[in-house]
Structures are given as C-alpha cells and as structure tokens.
Length: 151
Image (cartoon, rainbow, N blue to C red):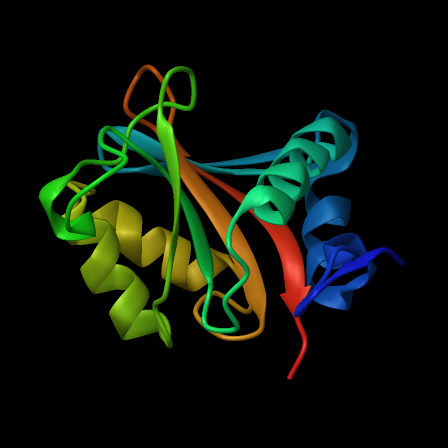
C-alpha cells in the first residue's frame, strides 16, 4: 500500500470496491442506464492509477472527498461545470455525506437522476473514499474510486 499524507492509495483493497469489480467483470466498467443517459463506474486499473497520481499532485486536505473535471480552474466551484477530462481543470472538493455530494454535482450541471445513481452506487461517497467524477463526451457521468481516507 502506498500512502500520501491523509489518503491511502489502495482503494482496490476496499471490499466494497472489490465487489464492484466482480460485478464489472473483465470490462472493468459498470454501465447503469439512467433515463436517456448513463452512469458509469470505471474500475480499470489504468484509470484508477491516473486519478491517484492526480490526487497526489493536489493540495492534500483531510476534507477532500472528490476530484472533479471542471471547465474552470478558478473561482467558486458552483460557478463552473463538470466536463470531460481532456483539457479540463481538475479540482478537489469537499462534500461530506451523500446529500452534499448530490447538491454539489447538481450545482455543476449534473441532472438529479444521475446524481442519485452516483449516490446509490458509489460506496463511501462523501464519507471514507475519494471519488473522481467527469463527463464522457456523450454526457454520461463517469465515476472512479481513487483512495481511502484515513480517519
């Protein structure tokens, strides 16, 4: 297990993430249709590794619960939008508890139905796991587990 400050970079050692990996199978992704869109949990090792590297480059604050691919790198978080990763500004955020995560994602332009899917399917979200969120080019919401938060 590699550690950087307050975070353990072994999210895959978490039994909740291991259960998702079993569900995802060889593809490493769970696609969950939601209304006209889709919520995807990306559990591929290379994707998790990239997000871990990104987290290690962020200012480490114990309250960090989310990494977000945003249109803007400055200003209030609520004044930007979630976007796809290429060319985005990766920002860390604090959202303690499912309700706060849902509110934040909706402020970033994510429909309530997709935020509900994230809350329902991402264990430890807003609690003891750091999750990364971005949009896929078709508007799908993508989530990746990044790290366990040390108490």
